[in-house]
Length: 588
Image (tube, rainbow, N blue to C red; front, side, top):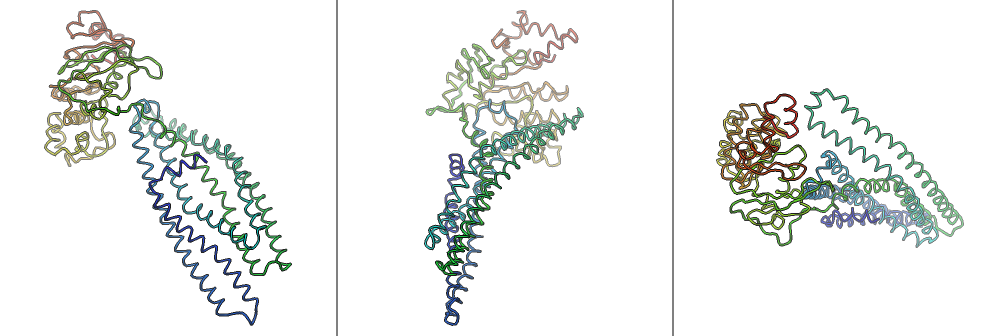
């Protein structure tokens, strides 16, 4: 019940729809309630034979006709409102889910497949919307009709009303006994559907890898395996549900047998008039129809509870990184960055330990270390994508934990090794950080990034659609658009996850020129992948086992016999040395 209440509360801003739908449901219930009563009156009048009032029964017939017409109108108006409510609820829940996801820490996305996240959204919200529509279009009418029918029946015969009332606690109790088992089956189906959907999304997003390694059959087999588990689980789940449903219906049949026998006997004895007998039978049939379709309502309720659990579990996750209540905007004057005794761990696994680093304004600093040593983690901490377990990070003397995340990230530009472009136009991708940028500003950034020369050759120029992740562009072209995006943002701090490491020499030269323009006048942190890049920085920071090993200029570290000096010696020593360089994600 607690979970059902939470589902109902999830769309509380649509209360006007609930009120309107309830109003038309009550009217519809009244229409259906009055028809058996009027039919009973007509029968009792007809029994009078030649003494019957013809005009009276004609009026009753016309009233029944009008109630049929109004029932049709009320039913469709309520259905229309229910459909609109469902669509609006879908939008509300989807937007709320998406906004909440975007507020979650990076660590959540490190452990979840994007396909699973999307599938949970679709499954949960569809079921919640369907449940709310069912509640408004079916359940409320069922409740009102049943309550009103029982009240009228109690006026004629409290014994019949009591027997029919007993249907509900018995049915609910029998359903409750089987609910947990059914939901266990449903949870298993959801789990394997999520796994299959997650892998499906991965395979589609990396379809070039799948095809180049000829693994189509393997991916299809993985998907089929988990979807077959869903099918196999559905067999005992469905069998369990329908066996229990037969048991519930048999109990209901016995109760209805008692009702009909009692009404027929009382009618035969003259305790009830023929009109009253017919009215009671019609009311019993009104209750019989929805009570035998309550299986549909119960099944959809259970499905909504089971399928919405993932939605509410995610909504329960609190953003681990939140702004302080008195957080102020970051004020950049020099872009002087200081890491003071910073430590960080993933799930209690230490990654960085006691990192202290002074990055001077308008300087270029290269981070060097083996894969997994924490180079990227340092930059993630600077952007507050993660929170350190201890220590502080300051920019111009301001602790980044006490400034707003928005102002912090507004002052940091990033160029990733993977350019990470979006579907849409080239203009939209360059202006991503500044959606209101003018055409002149975008073109200026593209020219500075050496991108204008290829963009203007395209048929639609800056309005060219580049496809998902920029698949219509070469690696060098995508990198130059990413650099133009960072140039247009014009942030005083720059993070480069070496953007030239996977490019051919011609593309690399053009991208390197663009990067030199981008780095000018900014405090730049480079996650180094090429020795040629490292040699041109102001300071090299080498990281070993999560700690800073050396700090110094390229000239100083070349003579220190440390990591950088070793890498310099290795770059000309053949295959074995190349393998060692790869451990540091370094190319010569």
